Image (cartoon, rainbow over all chains, first blue to last red; front, side, top):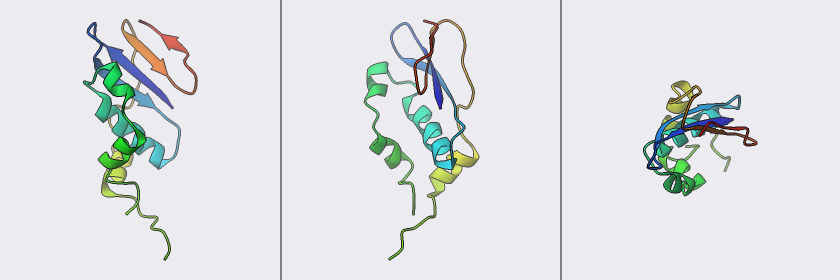
Length: 62
Length: 41
C-alpha cells in the first residue's frame, strides 16, 4: 500500500491518493483513511487511529 | 456462537467504490508505503 499526499504551504492535506494490492478490507480501510485525512493538517492526520477508521466504517463485520 | 463474516455496508461500499485511488506527482507531494521512498517537497 502506498499513500500519496499533497500538502499546502500551511501544512494541510490538499489531496490524497492511495494504491494497494491488498484484500477487500485493505481497499476499504485505505479508501476511508483518505476520506478522513483529506483537509486535515499533518499533525491531525498523524493522530488518526485504527479505531477512528473502524468507527467510520461502522465496524468491519456485522 | 460463530463470528460473523459479513462486512458492514460501509466496508462493502468503500471496497466496491474506493475513493481517492491513484497517485500524485509534483511539488508538495510525498509518498509513504511500507518504506518511505520519495518526497517531492
